[in-house]
Amino acid sequence: MKTVKTLTLVVVGIVAVGLFYLGVSVILPPVLPTSAASGESSAAISSHVGKKPQQRTAVRHATQKKVSPNTLVKMQYNPLARSHALALAKTLHMTLLLPTHAYRHVALNESYTSGSVLNLEFNDMIAIESKHPILPSYKPAHSVQVQLPNGISAQWLTIYGVGGGGHRLQFQQDGTYVRLQLFGAYIPAGLANAERIAAQFSPVS
Image (tube, rainbow, N blue to C red; front, side):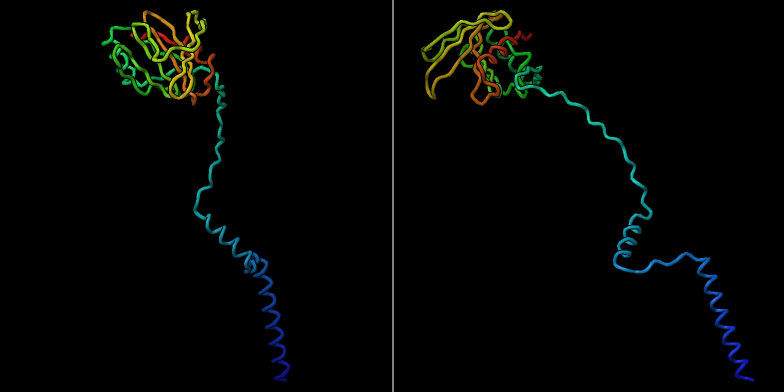
């Protein structure tokens, strides 16, 4: 009799435990199994806890107009370099001429006098100015008369000297004689391009 009661209590206990487990499993969410993959996922999730979601902003790229190497752009002079060149020109009692436009990256680096001549050194080109005609150190092998785009008459000189031959463009404007030379490293360094720059020279006051 005691054996039957004991067996009945065991069965009732098993059924009660089963019902309890079933009820708990319905109420609570399932537990994810722990594995390497799930561990990485949990770590990735926990690393973003407390962080604000990154706000995506639309980045607009301004369309930049491509400038051709043969395009002239407005010159941007350093105020000190410009005023120094102007002061030197005044000591020589002459009108200073500077190009208003040139190719990109052209800048006035240095200006100095040698006798009655004002030397203007730009990067990749040099301009020599004087109130008197500028005579070359070597006798020109050739000379050609041309007209600049602004209508001013000019002259190309081919001079052979130390370091080989070179071309010099000479013209006169506002009482000032100018001799312009583009260096070989100048891009572009064509003769026609030098004439275009020469046409941009204007008096500075």
